[in-house]
Image 1 (cartoon, rainbow, N blue to C red):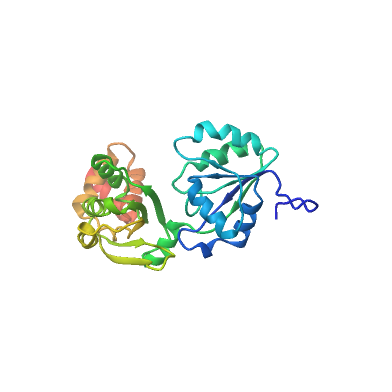
Image 2: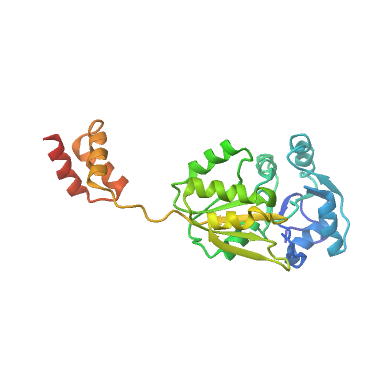
Length: 282
């Protein structure tokens, strides 16, 4: 443990502490120990963290630290880390995941302060474990933009990414987001996870369109995680596709390099493409 063995005081620095996403029983003993001994806790909402501290039977000084005041508050926190243990928490889950904490970590490291992580719950990872979708590669997207045009653009950017997508959303916007995902990605398999670690925890699976219909007239409460399956296997390239790609590459590259580039892009045999490229040139 990062503590002075004589005084049992925590060593100065920044302690990143993951907190429960619902069930208070998920607070780890190490996290509880750090929170009980920190000189100051930087919090999203002091009312939320006060309930957590009450659960473990301690009172500690708190400093609000969120999107709206982070730039003003950060220098003071960095200064205090030189001689005090400062803990960072979010309202739920792991700090820095979809919140402004990374700048505090970056500046603490730049100032030469010790940075320690106390890992624990994370809604994105919890939802992945419930969804029953591939987990070997996933892309965390946080909250999508609220405005329709920006949301559509963001979805288009990731349409070809061969990974499971993990998205945070609120109840009132859930159906619209599921509809936009279906329009932008195709009607993929997906899951909606909510109330995780609580009594009514659920993960509802289905296609994006069926889930959009399910929640259209009954938006659920609380924070939600949407998990979307990766795109299916790409259709094999046709001869016309191959010739078009080769013609474009031959306009820029020697025959061998053009064949190599198209072979890699389309997953085809280079020798066959080289012969085809020679035929096209002839």
